[in-house]
Image (cartoon, rainbow, N blue to C red; front, side, top):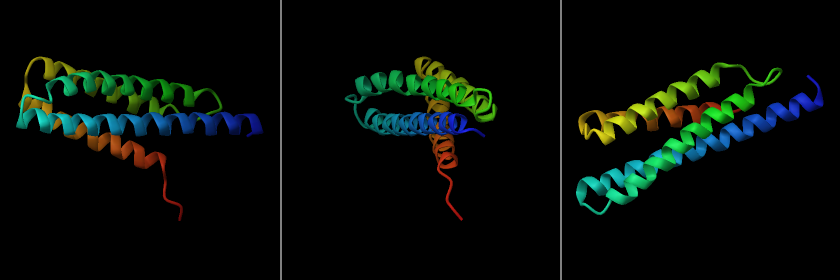
Length: 127
């Protein structure tokens, strides 16, 4: 690997780490506002705005995965993960709009767990 390829790979990995970290925080914020929404009617606007942010960060994650993949860079597997996550986010939005709380809430928990796992995979523990 040349120095330029190493720098590009490191830069792509850093962008992906940032994108997944922001996505995880956005989904956690959604969990907080969902709890407020279930307890009172005051969380509705925050949860609605947060849904746009969370979906946008999922698109950002997919973009970061594609940019990190470039030939000579990382493998294509993170693109599949990010695309799958975008499908989950789309299902989450659809179930929220349809008012399917029994599907919406567990799907949100699954998304937070998967985002946390993706983040943990990007920060390996040295042995």
